[in-house]
Length: 166
Image (tube, rainbow, N blue to C red; front, side, top):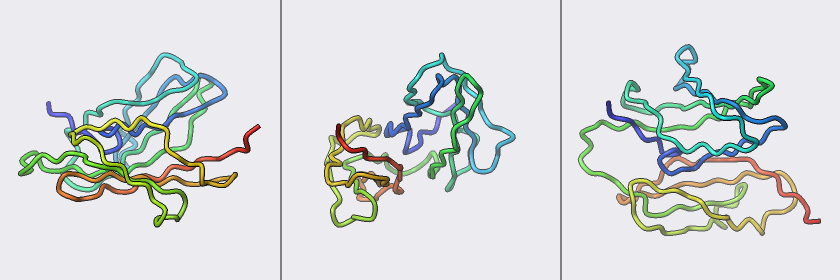
């Protein structure tokens, strides 16, 4: 059974979920198929970074939505995180590799930061991003990845709060 790698998971862009209680499980589903959601228990932890390959061989070729949420030990659920992904046919002519990424804060696309990476099919982004130009307050960070054919992924947008330094 062939597993399908999603951009957000293949590239290891993983959401960190912080809760007052420890996180004990997560569930995910594709598109609006909540009836076939997959629930995965985990050992309770205060902070959880999801890095996994999801078995999505039954998903049809085309554009889809991955929905995921997390529950704590009090059975309180987080909001649903939704990410777009494209499933390509298995007989795609070439294997593409991630060659770079770029990110920007809020709507400041002209101030984007571009970083080349060693080309690979799977890229794990694990670095501190320079967000020093962001003012104190609520913001969004936008990030996308470029492949070896020059095509950009969809934009992943994540909200964050910048607090004043003590």
